[in-house]
Image 1 (cartoon, rainbow, N blue to C red):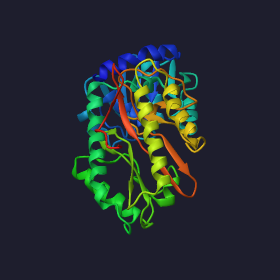
Image 2 (cartoon, one colour; image 1 turned 180 degrees about the vertical axis):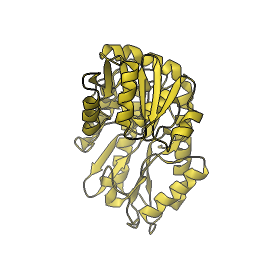
Image 3 (cartoon, rainbow, N blue to C red; image 1 turned 180 degrees about the horizontal axis):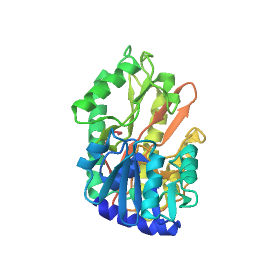
Image 4 (spheres, rainbow, N blue to C red; image 1 turned 90 degrees about the vertical axis):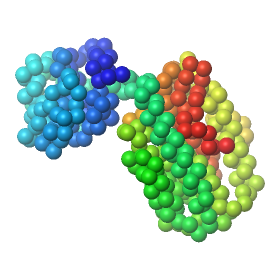
Length: 355
């Protein structure tokens, strides 16, 4: 889908939220609408005029790379002043501001600059709702990001041994993914060994991996702006019976959740498929986070699969399935796959590695 079609599709949601123009602030939203990686810029959509507001560092590049239908306004000072000038020129009456993505200072500044000229109105998820459904081109990029991540996990398996440091393992993964064409990791790589794996978002440390320990690795890559997110648990020797038992419970919870995914099913139902199974096996309360989250231009985006969010799953959505059990101070097991929703169900992206 080209930029013009994407922008055209948001007009109906703008009307629903009572605005005749929209200031897009979130870089991922701007990138989605323009096809150009946004940095320190805003995008104003107003009455058929799409103005990319930036500063002189990016002006020349933006003019070269933005497609037809976009004009570039270089701000000599604050972006708020350039926006105010454009609002006067364009005679904007009701300007939508992305409530989640604009600072309180910028919101107040814009409202002050436009006082008596334009009414500012907070808006929610106008662009994000469109981003939930991935185009075939987006799915190809996400799938490639998932393949690189899967290959990296296969590669790193032989480096998992007692005595290796967590941070060394993370470094080897990052070197590998860059050689494979990734722009870099999509987030700070998590390598959590032994008791560190009981912390869902452990900060990779210089700890040495011990003998016969689980080693949880959570990583993803950025490929052409699109992200992947996978988690696998390796072992530095023998697997003790309790760890094996928990691993099998989490693996089956993941399988049950993936089988539950299909268009028309609600996100909460998929979360509950995994959560109830884990509880039935005696580990209720030890799965402390949502089952999954959308992935695309951002590593965490809509939809979210959790007990607190009840959305209808649609064809073209891409999200993670990542059940877990964490035994405080002992170890944790999390197994994460990425799936795209097809007409028939869920297709795993990157190839199945978490067996």
